[in-house]
Image (cartoon, rainbow, N blue to C red):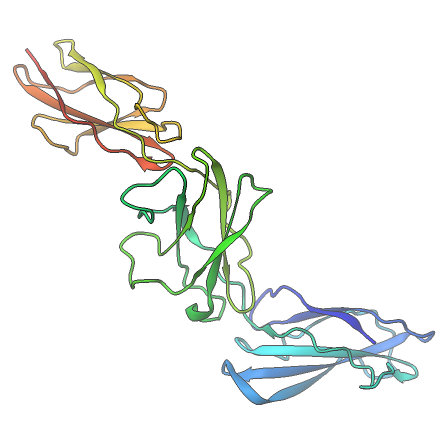
Length: 326
């Protein structure tokens, strides 16, 4: 009797590929395999009585065959559920057994493509743990892709994998595919929080999409690496000087608390009146000073703010600092 009957990965829709372990030929080569497919749904709805479809590799008594795989694309339709069984023939007829040599029925399988890979996978654009990230949890987010592989969004879900290295990741939770709360206001539609982390822990993430048939072919590539961190404190300016020709030099301290992750960079906002403006310049992570030509007017006062970024995002702006120019 044929054993080891499994359904293989789908490559398109409609398509089902089954494989099995060849049985002993009992001293007379196997001439062909005969199969039966049962269609269990129609229009995605369970049938009261399964529709049986016959399948055969060759006419009985034909040439030898060692085939142990069959592609049933010509027998199935998209978005339906099927199961399959098979039996082998040699010159003496079908395999012996109480049911005329049939294998057990395979697991049921849907004729779906794999769903699309989630997009915009990154640290969550909205905080799930309060107004700001905390250093014992990481919020991630991603966007729903409307390609469900032929299935419906009600049957799609996401599975999140996480670990301290790409080779130690394991499943840490699932999220339903239906977008909660209607149309999102940001470029992410779904979120997940991994909590109970030690501050400063580096965590690798992948997000897979599932429909009723398959897992998405790949997850996030490259792996998303984040650090369990809070937002950094605002740096403080230590000096603001000008050379009298329109060039200003700023110096500041590294944040008193970097949130548990190294500072990635700084932003400095400046303008002729108090309050944040669209005039912003940047500085790299290793800098604690910057000089640039502002083109200020003699006898004016300029106002400055600074903030720092780490792996958790941008921290708050500093309080205002000002400088009077001669």
